[in-house]
Image (cartoon, rainbow, N blue to C red):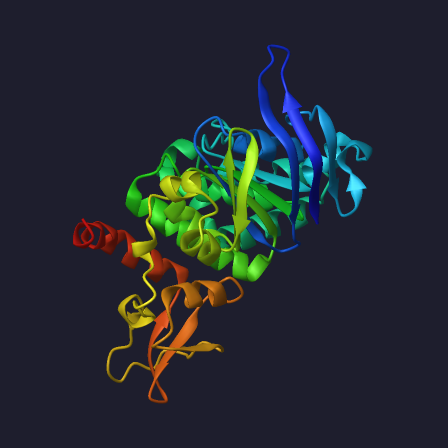
Length: 322
């Protein structure tokens, strides 16, 4: 879907933002790029839609060099969501959503229907919100509009540059859950930049860790947490090997099923005796797993529940090993 081939970006002052990047992002994948400030992650993202022009190398989308696309068509087919939401303040929510479809000369009826469908998709009642101005919405609601505006013209690719980092923790977690739920339905290729390892593990099918303009490690959340490539990755993710000890099972991290709960069973199961690393590996292919013990479903495991467990317990496990 998206391929970087020996891609570099340097500036006249001698700064090398990205160095010989080789990377392939699969169609329909939620791909997260993570690293400290100045590592080149946002530059790498912006080179995909040519907001930053590469210096050497080639980026391909669907086997075609991005330089061969008409730049307007390229950007119309790539949704872009920023940390600074950047909604047009003088326009209504519906008018904000309609921006790219109008540029693509969609019919008015089609645009209105699309706006209604997208608002419903993110839980915002169309009749209540479509005529409002951005200042009438909360930060979390504005960011939802930012996401669906990027989806309005049904692009193949969505680029997201730290879109939730300015939000309060509750709004941020809700939007993370929303984007995961949305991705189940839309199945877009999403490239997501963050500096937060918990967010990366929660959202990403695969994670690319960058340092000083170079790729240090690419892998599933389980790979990154269980087998950090070097000391930099180990220190950056803030986790020692004790955070995923082999003896710890998913029974501690799962969401338990109350007695008599009739929740629909996920299509794929895993034994309660499995390790957290094993469940993370399976969760790179499935959104949730049924946890079984002695032939019965006792809970559900998701990446979100694992992250909450690790976040709550990492400090205590660290003290035990001092």
